[in-house]
Amino acid sequence: MEVSKIKESSKKVKNLGKTGKTRMFKHRKDAFQEIAEKRMVELLALAEMIFKEDKALANRYVFLARKLATKYKVSFSKEQKMKFCKNCGSFLVQGVNSRLRLSKGNLVIKCMDCNVIRRSKYK
Ligand SMILES: [Zn+2]
Image (cartoon, rainbow, N blue to C red; front, side, top):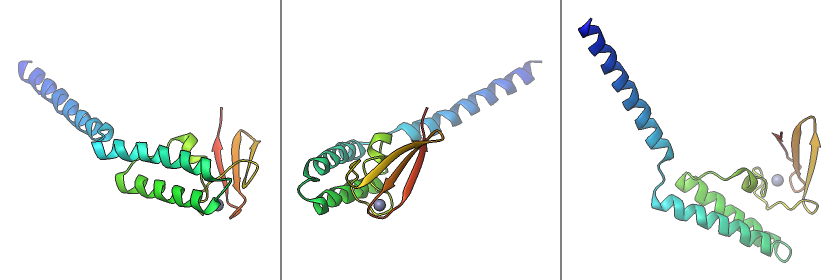
């Protein structure tokens, strides 16, 4: 009886250790990642400001933000992802160079620069 109990408890401890490690690894953010995240937000805001005057510069800001995201493994939020085209990397403004439609429970965003369609579900 006692031996089996000890075995069970040791199993539990092992499992806890494993899950703890993976969780720690997933949610850990270092200082570089925090700085990169702030810079990405700034760059997208700058792109939004400059878009009317200079589209090429806005696209350049998007390029830099995406480069930061890949280098420091920081992911964009859902709202941020809607602001640029994954295919051609151009900054998207609804009604100017992108089209947004709702159909069959899907959010459909079309990039008018490269004609690529991106769908995502909405509630
Ligand atoms: Zn595009």
